[in-house]
Length: 453
Image (tube, rainbow, N blue to C red; front, side):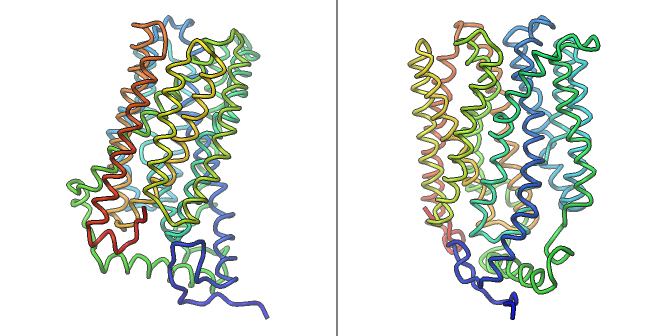
């Protein structure tokens, strides 16, 4: 007789420890149902966010944009994103993650396609700002949504698999974007970069409608789980949440003055500075070593292939150990070393690219583990608001990072100085996450919820 899913397994920080074979099978079913689809959504989102980096290889000269103007255009996305991130997640709690994620995708797909029609600095800034408004809330909505489906012991690898879409968007998108840039140029009277925006924005619009039918709000609503499976998983998650709220249940207004939330925001700000600062400029950094746009595309793809593999291994390692603080700190230091190598070797292409690889591996491996931390001590609306607040503060890096590198390049003629600054910020990230760990270990509320070093 098949083993039934029973209620009563105890939570553990180890991979499914205390769960029966059938319960682990339920978690695998949920993982394969939700995570690949959400990963695909994030891949589309991230590609629409950063494909401007490839468009710039031709768009800047076509529109007469300086490096500083391009950097400001890239940054305007984050102005809209920052302003609307927290309000977006508060609406999401009211209407449900499934509907809100669908709305976000449809609107950002439309606006992303409008990037094909920018004609100068003002229109570039306007459309990028509106793209940020449209996408605001997507990432924290998904992180919050995953907490409604996966126990804490699973979240490191699940968030890691979801966030693989970030480097995967460059792994897949780099050769596609550069191919569109090169081979569609002039077709139908449009430049290659215009075709790139049109064709890469369309999937978001289409898949947004699919979300309404494919995603399920909570386990108790899932028709694709058996009644026993749905009841067990919903009960498991409800009990895990209740155990946290027995210690302390936060009102969402408390999030804005919580010291630990502030420390997490600083950590992510520094990590995202390293990610976006180089991400928007990586094609142009690599272009200083070659004259071929296709070489730029394939080199970028190679860097992100290594990054994807590292992310999967690092997040699984974090879950296996049940540790969160040290993996974030180690990844940040690793990334800082990569940028320092790159800064010192800009006249030696192969070493500089190795530095970029190390930096990308460190940053992208740290961030998924980081995102497991807020839901260790926050639940419900407070968790949704905290995730949005931390993420929105971090987007300040998107506002200033690309612009800073653009100004630095205009002033110095190269990227070395700016990459050195990014490396220093990653050292700060490592120090602050260790401070967060110390503060957490001193807090009875947090220590009882097992944020492990």
